[in-house]
Length: 146
Image (cartoon, rainbow, N blue to C red; front, side, top):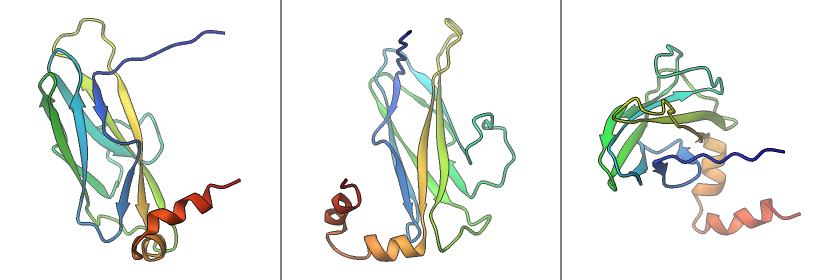
């Protein structure tokens, strides 16, 4: 059995993105933990890992800025906005994937780490049930009990 480890210099705060239906946008914090500046390229897909930033699919989210440079030991906020380019279901949640790839300043090594993070679109039903009530965080443990 083989074991592999991967190291990326660009990391994201959090493990998932939850976009509530009533939100104007969602901010994602990215940080460069490396010693050199990196260009970061961002995009969305619907589950096809072969879709890259050049894909012309009708994804209803946009990231601003789509590409940017992060200096060593610095951070950058990427803002995700729902474009309403297509309607999303109101009776269930939808899932998309937020991708970000770090591009080094030189072509040494030629490895371009890619991160894929789930982005949940919370429909009206989920938003009304959980997020509209104070203390909704206390309800989560009952859904994950065995």
